[in-house]
Image (cartoon, rainbow, N blue to C red; front, side, top):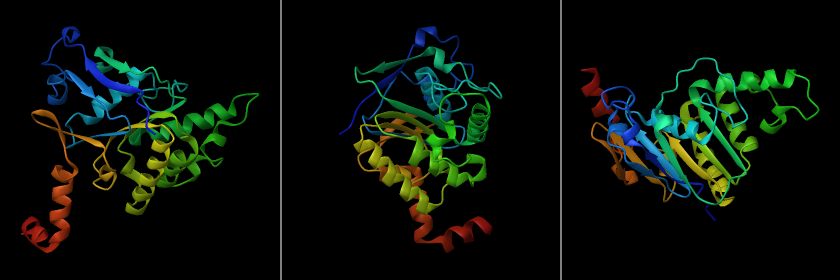
Length: 247
């Protein structure tokens, strides 16, 4: 049912100019030798600034995705902010080749939507690009609706999908719907790599969860993630937490 397209990401440590410089100074990078990916779903979780998005972006860029998001066919750039980490990574791939793929960056999805409109204004003998995204301008939908349209219409299975904080625009109920859609795509031989803060998304069964912290990263169980523990403790007794925070 699953298909491994990327087995692991390997850091060529000998080529790193200095582990005292960003992004190589980030604990998740300085302690990296190789990161093995689950054949179905792998999560990168951690605090803001831990480096999970930097590592995710480097893997996506090394694969050939546009650094600001989209497919391998997107080549726009509004601001070159990606790090040089991808130049020092090597992706160990399987012989199974994906038919589809997409890199979703929550912070720059607006730019992807704009680029789609620009491509559709250019002369073309093919159908409008937006048809692959549900036929409705992504700018004419809410942020959450456009994210969900991407998942439902553009992702077609047999793909390698890299998602950076996809929950940013999704309500809790839409996050649950996203889990269901992910499972459909996994059953259609897809592989996901996701950086997230959402304890809902990271509950996907049998996924690997790498928790990133000041000492690097470790493979952890869902119930051992900081996100799960803090969320559960708060929901069990919100009054006590608020009393301490607001005292």
